[in-house]
Length: 441
Image (spheres, rainbow, N blue to C red):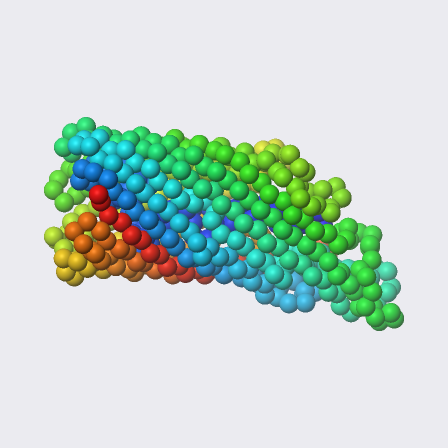
C-alpha cells in the first residue's frame, strides 16, 4: 500500500489544470483565453509571451491584472472484473488563477515584470479512490475464496486523495529596439514551488460467508494493507533564464521567437503526518520537479485594418526530464516524444470601442505507455476560445474570454497476474473563464 500511495503522491506533482505541455501553463492572460494564440503579442501580455515585442508600446507605464477560473474533470474507466465500480472521477479546480504584468517604456528601452502560476495552480480531489488502489483491495476476497478456502463475496474501503500544486513565477525582462525592424529581450523568472498532499485509506473490510463483514486480513501474497493517513508539503525554488527576438519584416507583419531554458527545481519535504511503515514522506528529504526547456514562435498579421490573425507554436523538451522525481536509471520513465501545441487566433473590430475574438489550439502529447496510468496521464486535446475586449476610455480597457477543451481518449492494456489483461481508458474535459483589466499611465 505504501507503493500505491507513493505513486499517487508523485502524480500530483504534474497536476495542472490548463497546461499546454505536461507541466507548463501557457494560459497567462485574459487575452490568451479569448484567442489561444499570443506568441507575437506586442501588447502588455507580451511580458510573458514576447518580451522583445514590448518595444512597440507607447512611452510610459502599462499595467494588466487578470484572473481565470478553471475547472477540469478526469475520468478513469477500468474493466478489471473484481472492482466494485468501473468508473472513477477526479475533480481539479482553480477558481483563483491570477496573473499581473507591468512595463515601463522609455523610447527604445523597456523594463517589465510579470507574475503568474507557471505550472500547477489547482487542487485535485479523488474522493472515491482510483482503480490502481481498488485493484489491490479487490484481490483480497478472490484470494481468500480460491487460495485459502474462506468464501468471501465483497470488499469495501474508504480511500481519498487530495493535493495542490502551484509553481508561481516572478519574471523580470529588459527589451531594446536595436533597429526599426528588430528588438531583443533578456529576462529571468524566479519559480516558487509548493506541493501539498493529503491521503487516507481506512475502513478496509471483507464480507465472508461465515462471519459477515470483518476487518480485511493480512493475506500472504497480497499487499500489506493497513489504515493510514498522510499529510505533507514540498517547497522549493528554481530559476528560468529566457531570451526573445521580435522582427517587423513588413508593414502589418510581426514575427517573434522566445526560448526558455530548463528550470531545475529541487523540493524539500516537510511532513506533518505519515502513518506508513516505512514512511513515504520523510521530513527534510529532497526531490526534483524540473520544468522543461521551451521554444516558442509567433506570427501576427493584420489581414485588414480591423481584422488581425496570430499563429503560435510551442515546443517543450520533455524528454530531457525524469518525470518520477528520481534520477536513478531503475525508476526513470522514458517519454515517447516531446509535446507541442499550435494555436490560431483572430480578432475583429466591431467598433472603435469593441472587438471580438476566437481561437483554436491543438495540443499534442505522446508520453508513451510507460508514463500513462490512472493517477498520472496526459492527453492530446483540441481547445476552442471566444471572447471580447472593450475600451473603457482612451487609456483603459477590459478583456473577457472563455475556453472549452475536448480531449482525446487514451486506452491502454493492463497486465495483472492471473487475470491476464484488461483495458483502462482515460478521459478528460475542462472549461474556464477569464477576466482582465489593463491600461497605460
